[in-house]
Length: 132
Image (cartoon, rainbow, N blue to C red; front, side):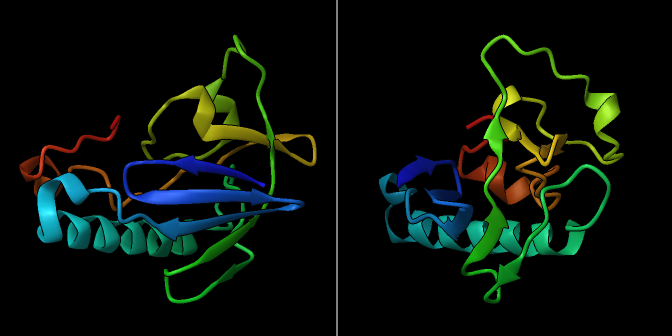
């Protein structure tokens, strides 16, 4: 099993599955930061549930009210891979980092497509940005 930590969520990779859960990682901001991180993680999971099924997204297979999202596990892109973002087919703005895409059944898909993050005033107030 592998664990990857983002700003608002933790991703557990186990076997054929990827599981995203809200993070409590904003502890440096005290209880308020922890609650912010938890809330943003739930909001991100719910956003991906809403966008799941859109062209170019890794599908959410199961969700428990945003507390836990389950996805099929994708293969990572190799270092140095040049992502053709237009070929993915997702028309909304995304954080264009190679680690946010992966291979699923031979197709390049978005792994992190939370749309609630875009232009988040509260996020900036706590000093968080889309790139960490």
